[in-house]
Length: 123
Image (cartoon, rainbow, N blue to C red; front, side):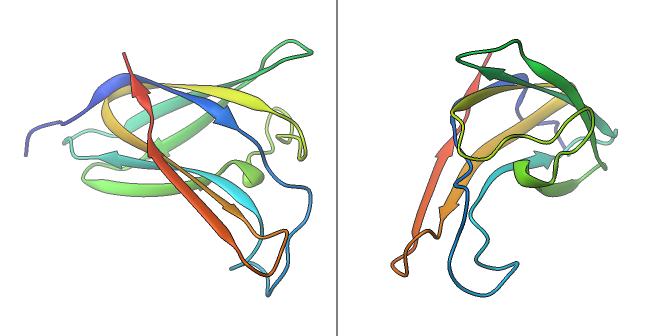
């Protein structure tokens, strides 16, 4: 199969709500990068998080196996530091092979949940 996508993706909008309602983990408020690797090689992805009031965090390192998808919750990124909740941020994903990235947020702070999803910007 052809390796679809680009090697650099940007998600300009990021925010993890500080709390949620409903059963865990299904209704934990979260940000997700849905990463698709259609290539024959592992995608070694480095993520850098940018903030309005401090230096960037990262790189966070993630592997997506060949011909696989990974739905990566930013809430679960811990090394080199957790992504803070209740803080605006942006992210840049750089991959060793072309990938496709879609951004999703579940905001479950109220009973009427909101789900947002967009395709990231690619370079």
